[in-house]
Length: 237
Image (tube, rainbow, N blue to C red; front, side, top):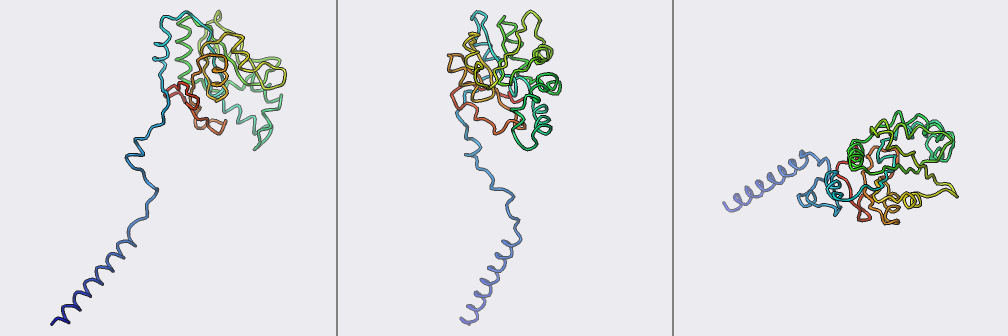
């Protein structure tokens, strides 16, 4: 009788093991590593601000000079840069050194650039304050340009408040962004790149970061907040 009981127990154990093995074989493999609640709650220590908070921080201050970078800051201009690369140096960055590209980009290709909503709100706020607005770009200068007119139209800047775009470029002998910010006595400068923020900080200006859209042609994406600067929420579009 004891032998029969042991045999039945062994059979049951074997059956259970087989069922467990079959269950494991039939269970679907995980689609991805998944995420824990702790990982979801983790936040990067970035100084986030809104346009309304920036406006509030300027209450009581006299009108001042403020500056904006252009590409990926006030305009989503990747369509023009994408076309320029395909036309002048497919798969390479050489087109950025080609004067023919800059002639096209600065004279009409911004018709395909989209003004960013956050820039509309910022520029409207600074115009209401009576601030002087300067656009300082790293684009190479050209003999003619329509960028100033495009920005005036896109952001509804009154003619009396329009300042010609400053093309800092990157050629020897040209003023850098830092020098232009100093020369124009700019107190607040908005930009998407690390260089925009450090240029502002180098001259004692308040550098504020706008997020670069993830589908921008300008890769890799920078680390917003890396220099302790303020970063505007929802500013990628």
